[in-house]
Image (tube, rainbow, N blue to C red):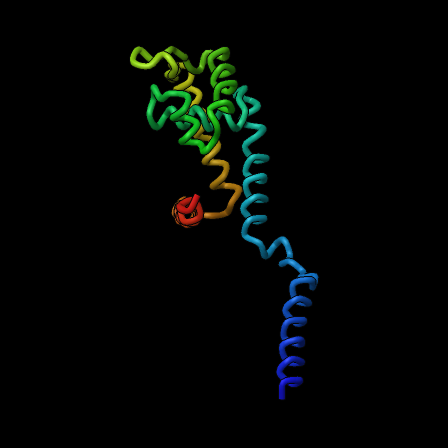
Length: 166
């Protein structure tokens, strides 16, 4: 009986070890949500790029302008937080937007370490021009605005659920 138990333990133990060493084939890329979201993001960027090029801005600059449209006068750090980026990534974007006359930068009166960013009249006008991006996305997607809104909310809920533990 002791030999039988020892052999059973050995077989079960070895089976666990072997499973860990087995090569498990991952899901095909098209069945992985992370890849679908990545590829969709890339497709949206390719859709937007010709229009953004015509406006003279990049996609990250477009995002900064949109963040400022939500709450003008944000600090660079607040813009970075809103876009889930580092301040060191936002600073060069804001400098280029300032050189293009789309935003102004000034040190905070309250805390000199902070730089406040404001949209200029030209920046606001460019944001109006950027509405063509949304129209193009709706047209090219074949979806209604309501369908895109529902999809966006579902993806936001997923993002928020995944971000809660970070």
